[in-house]
Length: 252
Image 1 (tube, rainbow, N blue to C red):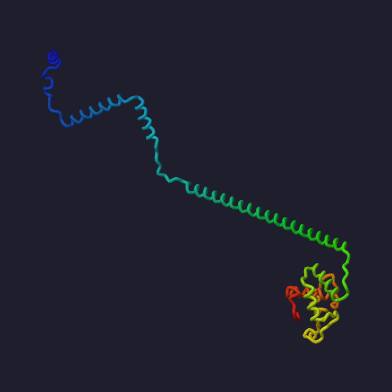
Image 2: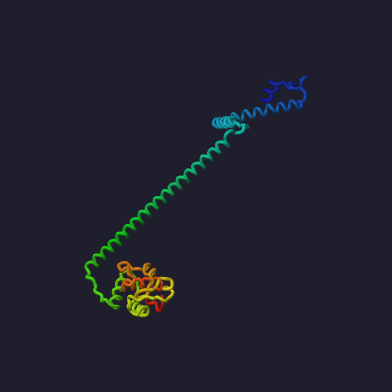
């Protein structure tokens, strides 16, 4: 039945009339192009609406990207300025640290100087107090009595020497006195080299005037023939040159 309908609707010789001829290569390509466009249209209509939106957005984003071949201006200058600013800041920080260190050093030095001054003041006050105590104690002590002879002279001289820190024993002093003057406080040497030079040795321990003046012990007589002054000056000299009069066994 269908065959008959087709036969009636489309006569058999419709395609074989005067224009019926084989399709050329150009016609085939055109037909293929139309078919491809149709397939593309069908494919696009089948894509969901959100996919279409995404594609459009990506395209727009891609379209908005632009490139410039023009050189970037001022970048080098900006970097140089930033480096210069950083260098200045570093120098400022270093200068502040140096100033702080110098200030701390000055402060420390001032504190040390102040402490040293306080220490010296304290020591001076302590020495003054000690001297005052010694004087007060000496004032309360009754004067010691010494005999006016060689024994008394040596003992008085030794007490004075002790106060001034001058070493020497009774035996060492007595031994040297007996060798030098035989115990005569007015003895004088007029023949040795000192006498020839015009400075003869005098007194119990035969001291020349320059030595007596240089090693004179405060609190004793300035007379070179004074027995106690002569002994203390000679022992002071011997302590300086030999450690003590005890070490002297000959002319000194």
